[in-house]
Length: 298
Ligand SMILES: [Zn+2]
Image (tube, rainbow, N blue to C red; front, side, top):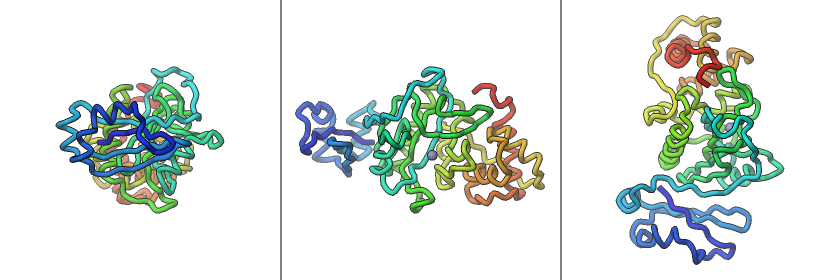
């Protein structure tokens, strides 16, 4: 849980910071756990972290505070706001949260996401959900391309495979869960349409990667998971059919697709090889998750 308080350029509290006055004044003395500052142009955002038990009793319905740091890299969704039907998770793959946020707001970079979730659990909104952010690039899921049109993208701060991939802290995952939970219910996003960037661009992307706990997230009601899958003799044609039924693009080599599948569903063995356990997982997941033709119920 966190509360955001806007500081002015000189670093002093704004006089009209009703947020501070109304909600957190009493907590500052007794319940402050941590604080962090994020800079944006000439503004700074101070994020205060309070002890959970205090928040739950004192703030009641305040579940997740989101700080607005809007990005210029945005336009209209061609199908309008109601066309959203995919939730896509990323990691930032940069050395700090600040560097990632700066890039996602740089007009020259032409990239953005709807949200950024820092490792300490702070949540920033860069693009309103009804607009299109530029996070997916060339992409495919269940027969659909150009996924920016219909997706909401969350960038989860992590250095990524390039800069020292590491576990996603609990505070960050709690914030991801709260944020995703709201998105999935607001847009009625199907479990099978909660994806990683690597699922939809398996030849280019590794994020959010094998340390991301999809199983836990599904247990919280977000996305699809099953533990089913016994070892089965590998069969390349059957594996390809299963991958396609789940939603993966048919256009890449089997090793590329298997690597993406394993990152999401068999994170203990990301080898790109069709071993018997991976084969069994593929069949079990395709059976539970696949079925409809790819473009149905998108
Ligand atoms: Zn990504």
